[in-house]
Image 1: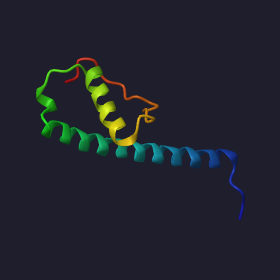
Image 2 (image 1 turned 135 degrees about the horizontal axis):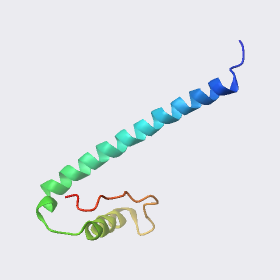
Image 3 (image 1 turned 90 degrees about the vertical axis):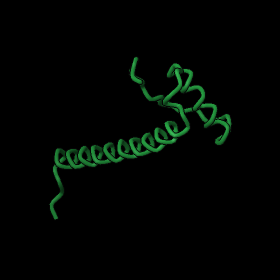
Amino acid sequence: MARLKFSERKNGKLAELDRIKAELAEMDKKAADKIGKIAIAAGLGDIDIDEADLRKEFEAIASKFRGSEFRQADPVATTPGAD
């Protein structure tokens, strides 16, 4: 069997990377949908709270169940004014 050229191997790896990125994005979306539904059911959609304060409260919940060593390395960017 002939060895693939560098560009062919690279293109294959890039395609694999794109597939994995799409899979991770789908996992994030499913988690966000799940958490969002729970938050709305709990009444968080009806309160007036700054996103930064709400995030702090979510981090407090996470630390309660995971321990205080947990910190999200890559915070999700929020859109100002998005409610």
